[in-house]
Length: 95
Image (cartoon, rainbow, N blue to C red; front, side, top):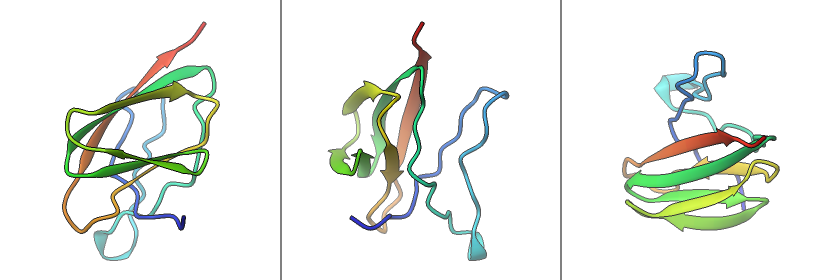
């Protein structure tokens, strides 16, 4: 699966980096696959269709659907359509 356009998302924690990366003409460039070690990750579809790729395996998220996984997995969130989409990403530290 080729890297689709990334969703616009950001961590609200000021100590975390903002994952949005503006490209030419205001388009959002894909965020490279990444991990959230030491965290439990929950992604909720809010609007449109969101694809969550976990270790290269795609999962479709529609509004009100959830997916949860350990932060050691590689994750890439993408909007593969021309329609707007949004997802809420929650990171919970695992101790």
